[in-house]
Length: 326
Image 1: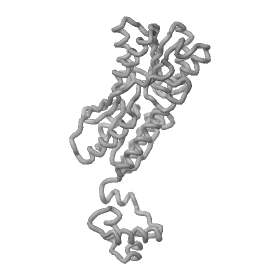
Image 2: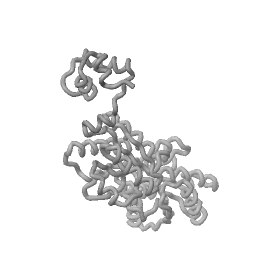
Image 3: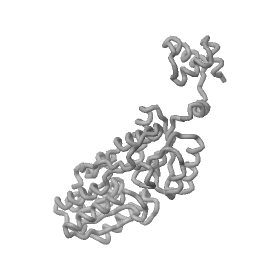
Image 4: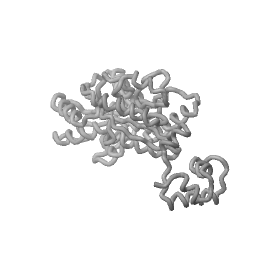
């Protein structure tokens, strides 16, 4: 295997010059740069990234922990984070926690051992103390875990308000809401609060069904909850779900029960994942600015690395995307 010394010898320069080319430091003529890179290619030389990261005390790698990359929202979020990280000179180390505390803890230790420059946390399993002791840049999604750890979320409360107001404006009065486990300390619970507060102000008492499983992304449980609602509350004419994936599951079951959307039941989801637009009928949903949230997460890691002062709370505005289910 070729070494940096082999490259220097072949290019007719010093090892220091090759190192400066690799790390883009100091003045090196373009002719010399081209010669060094040509020799690297001819020798099939690949720099030792671990050694380089130890030398410069920065790995240019960001750890990303999410519940499940196969979940449409987190898949899109991960894609945008990778894109903006790459645009800023970083690579992503992706970890799926699958809502397993032991697995998440192992990933946190692995990321620390690999000296990542920071961690973007989209999972919600471990206790706060696990992250308070990281001593490295961290950003969280939809969870506030400490006064000195920045977090990002959409305006969940306003999203719930908008969903309620839209359903009411469509003349729906027998409303229902299906959401995740409200015992988990997640900022997304504010979607439910905004929805319920708005209905209360209009004198409407909705049917509430929420998950009890700690794994709020369990698709099998979505099916069970929707079936429970349709059988137990046939009067319902409007539904708000705290995710588009829930809404898509519901749409299939509602049609299976012989009911029409939106004629019999109107549906509003949350997230605006791509699938919400492609399914028929297309899902009306509260749009989270997923790409803006991803770009901001990378910026916050960079700002912490640069030891800049940053705000801890970052709540981005939501918009209503009305489609065929209302």
